[in-house]
Image (cartoon, rainbow, N blue to C red):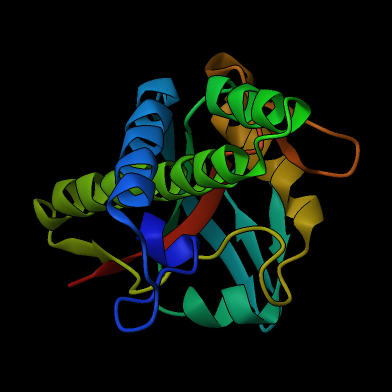
Length: 190
């Protein structure tokens, strides 16, 4: 997946042995800079409309696409993952010293690692739900996707207490470190 993020195409991309070794070495260095962490929380749904979901204790998520995804859900699962700031700093340092190739590789490793951590959380939660004859929705939504405004990042940040993972939220609802991901999925009966 990292290679795909970098634009590698097996049938058309040509790398010399030296380039491939540098790429593999840089990817390995990138992985060593990632410190994956994550969390999740289940919250009951207390009300539904065509374009909003009302959660226990009052938070409201506004999105017709999310409401459609959660049409058969009794609860939501909020999830977050991060790989920490070190890989982001390393990419910035690489840019500062004029090594854009290393920066791009670190960026791809960080992004893919954050996504992999989110997939792990998703799979873990799914396995826990299956013990209760429940399952997660086939898809999950992240703030900023479709008609689910980025401002909802504030709700997820608060409900998941993301400060404990050393994640910050900017005034424009961006997560810092940037290789951090949040998502919402529904809980359905199997």
